[in-house]
Image (tube, rainbow, N blue to C red; front, top):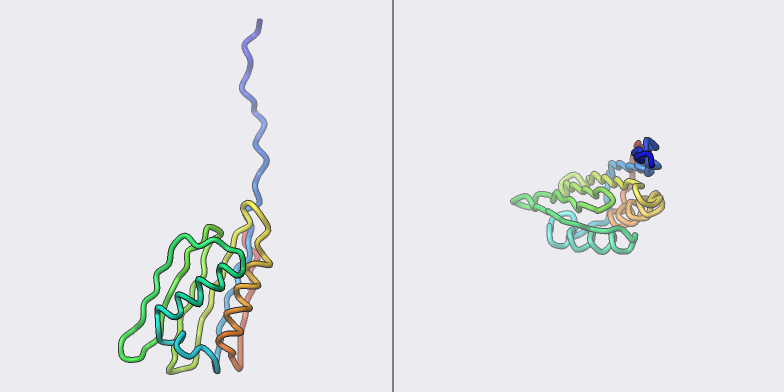
Length: 133
């Protein structure tokens, strides 16, 4: 009986593309404590991540001294959410990236991004959407 040969067929590739949403939010009318309070911003981000149906795997938020802003990240199984606030400028940068390794997460990324934009209520926003992969 002949020896069996290893298969040379490649496994089916997974979908590794994703959507990366990048926003500059100016003239933010909302935000309140979320602009200066790291714990409040982290709680908001965690709630919005859950509402969007994404999976947090870790967080780090830091408030700057003397009424400065907050910088924070939620690491997602699907990728990440980053928020940086400048309350003295009424300015927020927002970065949401989700990959589509096991499912198409574009609508979840958009929902998370839109929810946070609504909270900060910018007078002006510049948004870039980048298809990755």
